[in-house]
Amino acid sequence: MLSRLSPPAPIRARTGRGAILALLLALVPGTAPSQPTTRPAALPAFTIFGWVSPPVGYTTAERYAELAGVGMNVATNAWDDPHQRDENLRRLDLAARVGIRCFVHDDRFHRAWLLGLDTPAAAAVIDSIVADYRDHPGFLGYSFLDEPRATDFPALETLFVELRKRDPDHPAWNNLGGIRFYGDTTLWIDHTVGYLERVHPRVLCNDHYDFRNGFDYGEFVLNAATLRTWSLRYGIPFWSIIQLVPHANVRPITEGELAWQVSMLLAYGASGVGYFTYWTPAPDPALNWGPAIITYDGVRTPWYDVVARENRLLKPAGETLVGLTWLSTQHAGSRPRGAEWFRGDDWLVAVEGRAAIGRFVDAAGVPYLVVVNSDSLAPRSVTLTLVGTSGVSRLGAARDDWRPVAAEAMGSDVRVPLHLGAGEFALLRLEGTFGAPGVAHLSPTLAVVPSPASGEVRFDLTRLAGDARVEVLDVTGRLVWTRRPAAGSASLVWRGERDPGGTAPAGLYITRVTDTRGTTSRLWSWLGTR
Image (tube, rainbow, N blue to C red; front, top):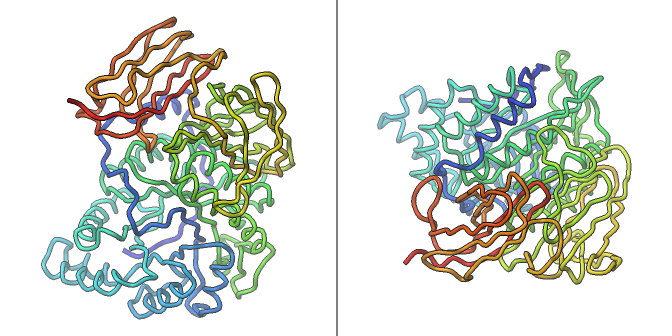
């Protein structure tokens, strides 16, 4: 059960767009989730890591301070990791001193597997592993196979179950392959869903490297959007490992392309970003590794300062967003594969320029936007037209560093121009109340009566234009209930039922109405059934 590192093969997906969309629609939340929605206490609010960590010969206090200095808060296995207890504990000691926590793999897991995971002898081995790491301040969780095969799932399932019994606070973790690791999109979906259904991980993570010699796959957004869908369906956070180091037919990237990958993941509500790689792997004539953040012989490359700057903005933005409810991610000006076109709603009416727009809301009803320059090669201007807001602020390099953004009032609208570097994002907070009534635009109108509600609540709808959809979401953004009313006007009653079955608990909920012209949402309080 050792970790393995396998670059994705240069394969070609054979599934057409229509088939992909049909498959993704099949993944819309509609079955009972397999996992709780709360994030385990052991996970950082937002995870930043590099695959892989310094080799054993460079496992020193100075090197782990350097890892922290680039903005990472999690360390994965060392490149030449022996997976032995004493070496793991040495890494944990060094990491804890600089505020980093580590995933570890221990070679005794292989011994337990050989003994038979369901035997008393194997149970004793697993007990000893957990006892060695569980209380260490530098310990984050247990690392297993990179890009596991379906034949690995039964053993992983058993190990994950046994570890949850003994150490529920520290997750067991795998990284999965992205779209290009598999023969086609159908196989990728089948494999990932099979892993989620069988292994029940605490976090979903995969890698996807889109930029190739001579061409780009154009599937990065499809990968991110699908991770978002699976994350909501199974009630767990998601991370993704992004391309940095060139190897095989994976080409060198620009600073803008690195920023673009990070920004798109934020727009889709990722809870963690990994860089491939932090430490350059050992020379290999077949893979022909280029320089990563640190060279194989321990020299910083220009990427160190680039990634450090990126992480100074990524960390506060990511930590802010994981405390919010993700509503949607849409694209204006151009639509990548797997993405939705932008549609105005009752607070963001229009977008000028090429941009991805991630919509979020906090528990008090305050709206937030992640605005991404969709051009990874050049700076661009993006202008937003907003309604129902008295001001806009932009997050800087700290959680509380909100700075006013210049805006131009035009009647009831406010125009906000943003100048974004190549692939850059801006996290905006809008002043005002989410879903404020009385906005006269083309999107549908929605009234939630009463709020707070108990027993039943009524959704009064008008101005529905074709293919309308009404959804109730919980504050994690997961779909609870949906209906498709006819065009025109409608009144729907919800009595707390969940489409997967059962009854929704008391709490805050969002009702979202979408039709062909726009989206309207309301945040409201549910006191439960009588």
